[in-house]
Amino acid sequence: MVAPHAATPSLTAALAPGFADPVHDAQRCFRALMQTMARPGTIQAYANETIAPPTPLSRTLAALALTLIDYDTPIWLDPALAQNPAVAGYLKFHTGAPLAETPGDAAFALIGDPAALMPLSNFNQGTLEYPDRSTTLLMHMQTLDAAAQVTLEGPGIKTSQPFGAAPLQPMFWDQLTANNAQFPRGVDVIFAGATGFATVPRSTRITKTEA
Amino acid sequence: MDPHSESAKMASGPKPTPPSTPKTARQQAMALLASADPAQLTEMVDALPVSTAHEIVRPAETGLVMARGRMGGTGSPFNLGEVTVTRCVVRLSSGEVGSAYTLGRNKQHTRNAALCDALWQHPAHTVVIDSMIITPLAEMRDAARHLVKAETAATKVDFFTMVRGDD
Image (cartoon, rainbow over all chains, first blue to last red; front, side, top):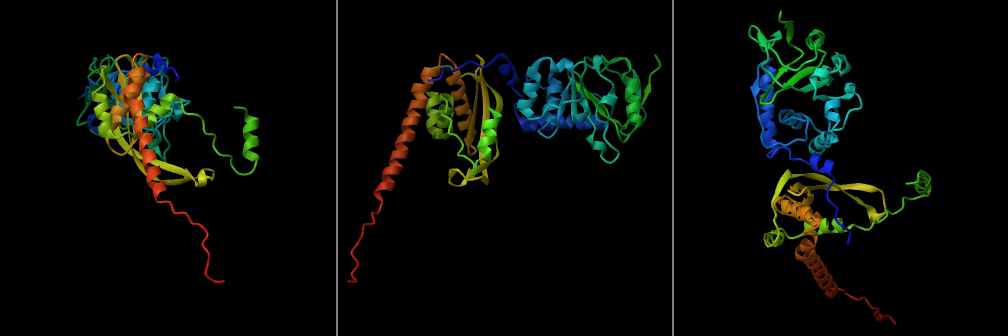
């Protein structure tokens, strides 16, 4: 008889539980995400306690990833997430998504450390014929209710919506302003906090708050 | 694999029969668990003297898998049709990950099969699982096969040469 061997540590971590109730958990997450996409800059409460992704992938980020990603959507992990191979293994196991070689090939980019984010122009901006092919950024944030850094205006916002998140790269809001100016092309950004998420889609106009 | 020998094989006329690699003990155990009678497997798992505490990594889910075949076992592959398959992955607290794919929609059966696969990989439980589940299942399967063979053999008709009456 072949001697059974214990699973290797990285494999064990990669095979951490995903959604306990895949259909309804994903629908609940998607509903909250849709709500915040429709109201840019507002924070939608979302928490999933059963999901147990390998560090440094946060629960909210993992829930978003399991909701949005499937075998058809190449993903890109930033160096902070890629340093633990268990993260890629976890996402591959639960979603079947291929890993993109460059950020420009990715449908979704998972950012574990937004303070070290590369320029947004490196991601897929979509084309005028197919603006839907751009990358969607899922960013792991420490806080979503930081002091307002920007004022948002545009579709889904009645007058204006103050928004601030941390940590962010110093030039981030300038880059995102330039990104949104090329509408309908450009990336969409989802900020995943510990207890909820907020979005700034490319249709939103951004004004930096005078500090 | 040596690329040259591979291309040489590919070039030599009809495709060779896929080599029948000997199945590992785990593969054999997983196949037995997947084809076991669901009620029987539940009874066996309930009777296990070891802790069956586990967490669900991937809850049992049902989907379709395209079954493919080869004409005569050697022809080029063709799509036979889609079959319903349920899969499940569980993990023991000690870290062993067990998975199961079973035909049909019986989620309880799939969970039990995955659990047995995980326990089988645990060094301390392998002997118990082998003696209480795998071996009895193998015996039952062989007995069922023999029964079908015997029943079929009983209906065999021998066509012996008869003398025709046209002399």
